[in-house]
Length: 129
Image (cartoon, rainbow, N blue to C red; front, side):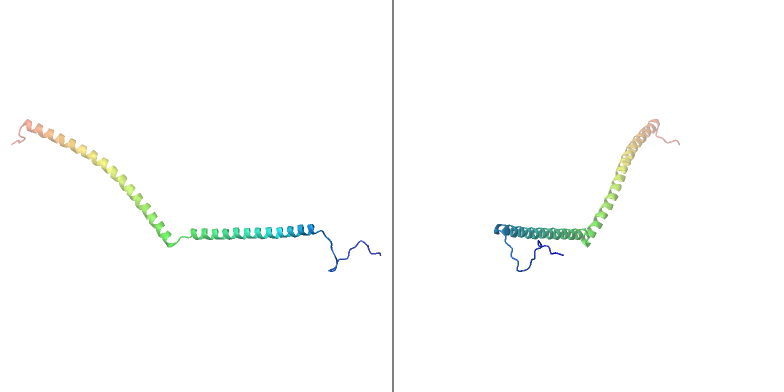
């Protein structure tokens, strides 16, 4: 078997010749890649950190503190008191209508009593001895 003559043997002593322009372009491309990678990594870390902080703030805001619980209880009590006051006010409005009606009836009854008294006086003294 013959060895292929086109096989290149590379070692640490192998010399490579290349134009400086190409070498600078390769170095700049590698530097740009490394810089871009570090910027993207930094941006991702910043976004993840802000997301974690936002989640933490949201969790802290959602937990009820004793002061919040007390305020919610007071608000609930105020709603109940307001409902009771509304019911009482409606009853008072009904009472007012009833009182006005009864007042008119009483005035009419007093007028009728005065008329009856006048008839009795006109018919005599009213004594039947």
